[in-house]
Every structure is written in structure tokens, then in C-alpha cells.
Image (cartoon, rainbow, N blue to C red):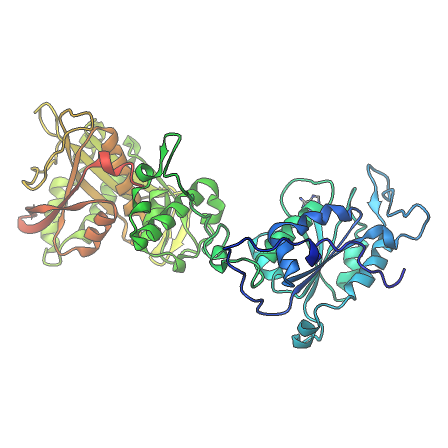
Length: 517
Ligand code: ADE
């Protein structure tokens, strides 16, 4: 067969609806249109491309779409395109000779003349796309790559697929061949997959989307995150009130909304696609991102390729020796520089003893939490084994009945007020006595994860005032506490090994904070 004209041209401009009044006209195309040829035994299947965005883009000359009937290249009376599989087996296989004639002709069709002129190769980048469940998975990255081509030819197989020599032949002939699957399931043919790929590719071409910003923040975009939930009016619908669930969204504070959107995108990706979290690049994650990841149980380690899953769990008796060791190792890190090694050692020997940790493990008014990594990881500070304790926190709850306090509970500073419980009953205070993280994990978000867990545990225990004291010049620690929702609540003095230190006191109400993130 020769000179096959497209048998169906589904996106002719005559079938495209005019833009609705008031809508924004798409920007003019930055370059030549993308030529798309689809070869199929069901040309009508592709009529869906006549509709909506892609149909409009074709009508405006942004894409140049042609659909061909494979049977036009069959040579027998019955227009046969398939035969039984060599070696036996179920189904039918599409014939290489018919496909060869079709593809020779369609691949030779000229892409836009301007693109051909601009291209170093003389005819632009041309890709033969073969949809198949046995292909590489088509992703947003694939769409971005193919959107940069000049000419895409889709070969839609049916039955058991196309004779494997077809892809082999064109690859050997120097044609770029992409055998692509749209997911791990089997369709009856490549047409639905081609529709999916064409829509994903075409909307990335310049001018196709009315608002090009739409592709910047969407799921699977450059951020590597799923997009956060979106809402519109009415603000309250069937008892679901966005102003209550996400008050900042209506605040008009754009920076705050942007931050919270990103936090929610991170939380959603953690819940639905943890595989995407592992692929995030640490250099794209700021401190607030790391805190959001940590709240969801992921640490970003200095020197590691991507985030590592954290295990944050209640401490158990078996942790005792490791806990004592970790406490002695981490306490000096948070000390003011003027404290001597002897003063620090005296404090550790008096307060961070095996007896103290054993008492805490046995005391229901003490919430002792530990953190470890879910897998081995290499950090700039050295190797960290999976399961090794890398941080801990301790919340000491005041006895509500005026009984003996848990050992180590410091006097509650004057600036800390204890709000009533949400039901109007008496409030309850607790000291966040410890949040310490191994120095190798500094900046990883592990402290934020322990903090978030401490706040959740305090909320569950009915605490309405969770307070802490931290060395006044330790701004890094104060920033981390502020990010977790703590606010200044005064000051106190604190004795470390006989030396008096001036602490900042911070507090939050866990009953309010627990619903925030
Ligand atoms: N043809 C049949 N199933 C397919 C899939 N999952 N992706 C692409 N093409 C297909």
C-alpha cells in the first residue's frame, strides 16, 4: 500500500467548540506543533481525543493528530492483521509484515517542517511508542520527556500483542522505540493506554493548558510529592467544614497557606506513596519539610541519599542499657559552653542513672519514647544500624491528686498556666523533661518526630499544659520547639552539676496541638 492518507482525523478544527466566554485563551505555542500518529484497528476508539483540552489544542494547531486504521495495510481480502502464536498457546499475535508496512509509511511522514528545520538531525526527534503491559512504566518523567519530541507514533496492539520482531527491527534501524506500560494490569489493547499517554504528554506542550502554573504544583511534578487535598466553596458541606479542619486556608496569609499546603502534600505522600518519599532528594528539603517528614516518621540524614523511615515507639525494659548510654552521650550536646566536663559528668551521674530510667519505665505517669531507624543508613557522622537507639524523649506527668511526683519532675515554673480540660474539667500539667538525639542525626527531623509523639502521648493522657525548660542561648532548640507549636512561657534557673543556668520556658496545650498537623 502506498500514500496512505490518515483514515480518520478525529481532531479536525471544525469539531472543536469555541472557547467559553470569559475563559482565558491559552498562550501562543512556543514552537512547532507535536505530530501524533496513532495506528490501531479501532480508529473510532481515539475519537475521545476530539474532546476537551486535547481536541481544543488540536484545533488551535498546538498538536497535529492523525489516526490510521492498521487494516489499510493488510493485503488479503479479509484484511487480516493477526495469526496464531508460534509454538502454540492461547490468543492471536499481530503480524509483523502488516505492522512493518504501516510503520514504514507512518514513520516517514514529516513532522512539522519548522521542527524539522530546527532539529540537528534534520527531521526532529521521532519516537515509536508501543503500549504494552510488558513495557517500562510510563510516569510523569516519561511524559515530560516525550513532550519534548517532535513526532510520536503510537502502535496500538490487540490480542496477545505485536510480533516482537517489530520493535526489534525499528530499534536496529536506529528509530527510538519506547515500549511502555501504563500500569501493572492488562488491558485488551493499547488504545486506552495510548489515550492516557497522549493526554499526559499533550497537556505539557506549551500553550495547551490555559494556566501553565497548573503543572507546577500538581501530583508527580517536580516536587516529587503528591498534591495536597483541594477544596472550593461552599466552605461547609454536609457537616464537613474546611474553616474548622484547616483554618489557615481561609486566613489570606499566603506564605502560611503555602507552607501548610506543602506540609499536607508531604503527609499525604507518606500515607499513600511511601515509595515516593524514599526518592526525595535531601537538598530539596528545608527544615520545615524535614519536620513535616519527621512527624510522619521519616528522617532526612546528612549524607544519606534520601529519607529513611523512623521507628518511634514506647521504650521497653530491654532498652534500659542502651537508653542510659544514649542519655550520657547526648546530654553534653545540649549544654551551655561554659559548663565544665566535671559539672556535666556530675549531673549525668546524679540524674541519668540506670535506676532513674528503670523507675521511669515502671511509672505510668512517665511517657518514655525512643527512636531508631527502620534500616541501616550511612550518614556523614558515620554508620547507623537499623534498630539502634538514636533518640529519646521523656514526658513526666504531674500527679493530678497531689500525690508524690514522678522522680526527676522539676518544679513547674510560675509562667506556665494550666488550662481546663476540653470538657471543662481540671487541667493537667506535664514536663517535657527530655528530647535528645544522637549527634549523627542532627537536622534529620528525629527530634521533631519525638516531639510530635510526646505531644500526642500527652494529649492522650489528658495533659493540657506541656512545658519545658531549655538553655536560653540554644536558639536551634527553641526554633525546633516553636515549629512543634511551643510558645514562650517565662524563664527558670536550672542547676547542672552545681552551676546555675538560665533557661527559657516554653509550653503548649497538647489538646489543641494534637489536631493541628
Ligand atoms: N496493553 C494492554 N495492557 C496495557 C498496559 N497496562 N499498558 C500499556 N498497554 C497495554
